[in-house]
Length: 432
Ligand SMILES: Nc1ncnc2c1ncn2[C@@H]1O[C@H](COP(=O)(O)OP(=O)(O)OP(=O)(O)O)[C@@H](O)[C@H]1O
Ligand SMILES: [Mg+2]
Image 1 (tube, rainbow, N blue to C red):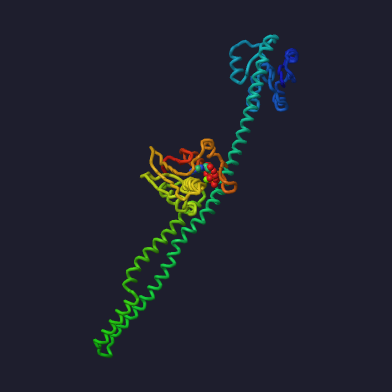
Image 2 (image 1 turned 180 degrees about the horizontal axis):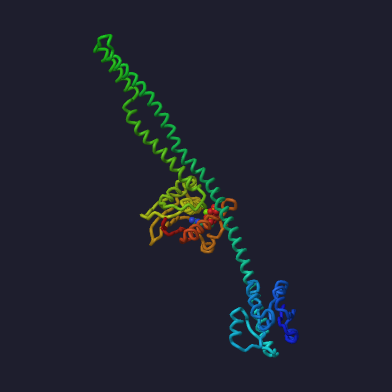
């Protein structure tokens, strides 16, 4: 402990010094008989306790007290006034200006130790508190940094998971697009063949018109009849009735194909958008599920039928890409679980419904189920029962995070091992 004793009377300084030195505490004492020196001493030393006389020439103790308290750096320094004054006004002034206690003069041993001990204890406590505060502040800073690092890692994991999912999806999407593209190609071929036939017929009709229109020669009825016969013959040969009936059908078919391709591309775009742009919009959950199913890997999709039991639900405020990712993770898990049983007759039922101010989605599969002893681990990051290298084990942890943390929702699982698994998530409808 470092103690400063300020008194213009050297006798008092000596007594105070003797008492302090006898105290069972290791102390360094600096004695000062000029109050004007206090500020400099305070700057040069780190005092724990100041004993301060009140009545002094040039600068009285209360002014010194004010000077010390004006600097917030000395807030926790204990200041005990040394006083022979008895009027309550002086005491009031001392306490108002930041004194912690007082010791009466002439200094008596018992009182001095009692007050000095209390000051030492208070000073130690405040130092301890300060140290604890600094430690907590540092821990808080470290935690904030750790939190940021975790968030960054999670962001990268989500991006990595997405890339992997997109890679896997690409094969499925290519297959989905190839099908309409295939019939669009053959429709175009048929249409160009039909156009040729129509062009031939138009030429024949034009010849007839020219014939009728001809001013040079008188029109022979026989000629026209022959012309018409030719036309009828050609119409039969070129199957014009069939062509006319088919064109409408082919165009409708092709338009459907083009719409299907653009729907698949749109779904993929929605999914590929970064889930961290946090763009919130009013969406239809049933539509997000449809999009997710559309871009599912088609090899995987072939292991089960997906039955949709969509309820009438309100539109929800969400990020399409994030919710799409949750649904994709859940359906992919169900399909993978069914495939692990080497089956092709799996059944997945997707239900949506409203519950109070929440929209809910339930995905139930008749796969192998989840054993009781791992049920509480499946949401842990990196937990997987799949072959090393084939899965990262982050699908459910990311999905849980999105629904519970980002959307203040709920995420639950129920399973009957050997029979079925039901995942349910719900989140508030929200408002824009
Ligand atoms: N529908 C389900 N049926 C049976 N087990 C499931 C089902 N869904 C999840 N699981 C179990 O939970 C584990 C964790 O799933 P999660 O989606 O988090 O990771 P993963 O599918 O193993 O890997 P990733 O999703 O990163 O490719 C799975 O490995 C599996 O054991
Ligand atoms: Mg998964």
